[in-house]
Length: 284
Image 1: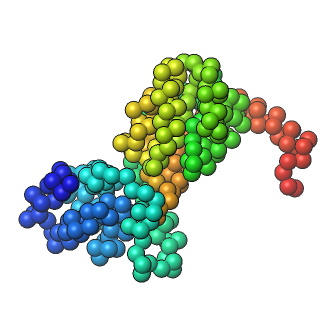
Image 2 (image 1 turned 180 degrees about the horizontal axis):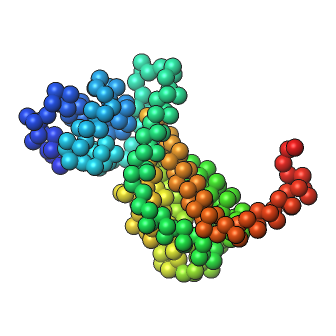
């Protein structure tokens, strides 16, 4: 594992490193089973350097940034961690809850920055176009990703009236029986990825349906079945995923869609307002 490219780069460039960079390299090598799962802020804290120094270290090794370096470190490890293992390896027994809110929100700010840096505006526009043109839209999102999928379903169906999130894994075949090339399947999946999400996307491609994937990594098993993909960072120093960035991506897609189709959307919302008033939906 330590013979992989990422570690070779550290060893070969060691003599050119600054004192701080050597400390980071030593830590990554000595903690090669745990370090790949640390956020930049947590790694900086453990090494006792600034977070900016960690980011500069990644560029020094000719990576595109810390997330790129981290992906190579995780790939070198070549094994999936269980939730219990990730919890154990990202939490020290001396950790306190005193600064958790600051730590997690700071990690989320970093996730948003990383996600924004990975967004391809041309791909984003193509996805918006596919949403508008689709005859039917199906959302595939299981386990924790279902929370993100439900948000997307609510607003897409509110304005388009053609969106369904398939919640029952066992009933997916009945829902997708008549899937055609005019339909769009949106797959949401984040590590650890569910087999059913991958299987449904594979089936959608076999039926020539359009596919969009929102996931956390270019090595995600969902990516090979995507016509268009968007990568959203989800890592915080915990066994859970943070969905701040995926939710922001989805909010952007919905906003772009409504701006593109603003006349249709405005008309529908006006009609809905009348209906909501009739049924006394909102607290006054």
